[in-house]
Image 1: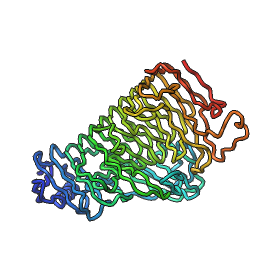
Image 2 (image 1 turned 180 degrees about the vertical axis):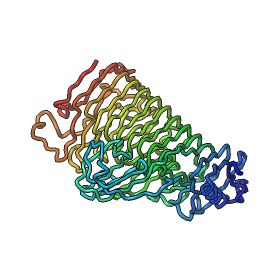
Image 3 (image 1 turned 120 degrees about the vertical axis):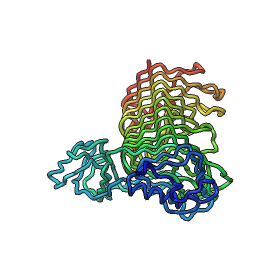
Image 4 (image 1 turned 30 degrees about the horizontal axis):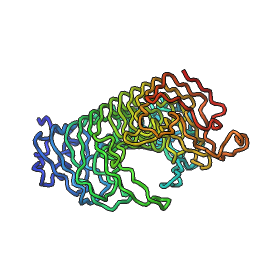
Length: 493
């Protein structure tokens, strides 16, 4: 009986020149049908050409030390992935009743629902448009949505972000019980040379199966020129739960400009890791070279996720566009683009070295909102090496004049503890490190009782600062305009 499936058994040559994609697709199809793992030839170099048919991975796969060349200079479908990792069971519709923010249980029996598996559930409602984006990439937002894990006994895990009076769609996918592991391999993308516009390339791994681990995969990019289309993520995780990217190498993509929806030039985001609607994903020991190279876009982006953790990682950027519930970065190094986010719950950064302009950037295009608490502990912050600037620790820009589709709030309680600011390259008139910039200069002590914010940004309840040290020895400044924070409790120790 076969122990594992090889690509060579289906005609792969592995010489780095012959297009082996069809053999790779056929090998995984056979492995899936016969429930066999796949293992590649260690010294092979598999060339993957323009084909649009992905290899579907449903069994453990070991790419060993094989090399893969993915040629994106000519493609049949730039959106098509090379590998897809789907859930083993199809999605179904569930007739669940409306749910509320913070709800933890659904009475399944009362709904006539019986579940054989825990489910990954995605709901949406057309009653409210949210994430109505501001700026050069402005848009009209997206329908209110949530995802959560629903257990067989009706418990809701990972929280509900919003109140729903009507659910328009409810799609549920059984969560695979057995783990699936994909490991090894060195993948080189020959970058596309397409027109620089928002035609996001796939051409990597797309994971929509819960309980999946990708380990020890090395990805690099070559042959970038003075123009090209952006990438949505070589590693793309979407609409699943309990996934891990472990000890993988990722690469930043060259920054290209285009004209955004507001009719002005904008730099396009281009990612090597992307997550959409993922619940509980862990990035462990993932690393990137050149994290201070400002010609390369930040490597990680996400939307609508919950419970993201980075541990022992070295990355140029971590970014949560349309909200994340629960965000942890520990024992890690963040490069020039830093941590940019909006979201909910607890955000914790501890034992982190930051080289970015701000320790945390709250995304202005989505309202700078964080509906929860923020903890910054044991941080070394070296603001933008090579650039002379007056550092601002928390980057906030929201003047209360734009409707983002939801109430906006800064973190309720902020704890800043054991932080060293290496403020060595600063202007001559530098007064000291600021926690907040003056994000509404029109609001002053004189008019603070009459100034109107139609869509107000709620200020923090409290900020506690313990043992914040600066290399310059300059005093700490909460904000140059304290009229912004009339009721915030401030403790500095």
